[in-house]
Image (cartoon, rainbow, N blue to C red):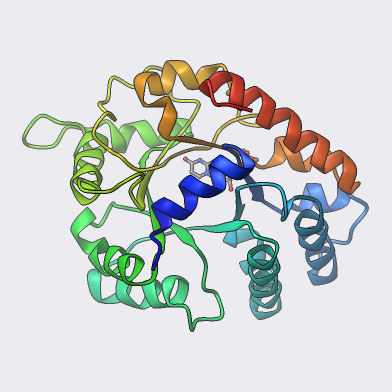
Length: 279
Ligand SMILES: O=c1ccn([C@@H]2O[C@H](COP(=O)(O)O)[C@@H](O)[C@H]2O)c(=O)[nH]1
């Protein structure tokens, strides 16, 4: 079975280094002329799938915006995931889960077991109960070709107080997370299946990402103020591993499918230039 790292490597080679988020904010539903209810949610997600499912490498539904409608919102999420996978996009579900190991095992089967209704290619997780507590997630990902993206240096300004705090050995919390993920990816070729989340807003981090060998998801572009040009400052020599991620910047172009595609193409062009990636 092909690993997530290999599948991502191929998808990026075919479609370009871009992740687009599906974040149906109430304000975006209104802006698109949709009602702030399950029908609006379904229409919004369906439009993004139709516009981008067959051209963007990775699509990242933000679970919170589906969960807020309860079981009917989750049903829309399930069908959105199915449609995206059928269209050939890799689906990264942004859920930022984390708990004690025995509960993480249940989250892992919810998202990374192929028999689950919410089965996706990869998920985001939080390491703040200890990277070791995420072991069941890493194990199920390895068993089924899934991916796991661990928060390291998040794009929001509040994150630094926790992530840049020092551990007893003098490393920052973020560097300790980075080093543990690098260890998990140590033998991976061409790309590891365990990634990190490093915001495009964080500037020159002073952190060493050089040994990670896995994908570096970079949110914070567009609506949160970072530009593709900032990626060079943040990632330096690790640029080849970066997967830039935009949500509102692209979604603001909707509801017209052609305009959504044009917005995704525009940010992809910016990212290719910033990353020095081939067209
Ligand atoms: O550090 C992080 C981790 C995750 N996110 C998520 O990405 C999108 C960003 O949306 P934009 O509209 O492009 O700002 C959103 O779902 C966040 O929850 C992040 O922003 N930063």
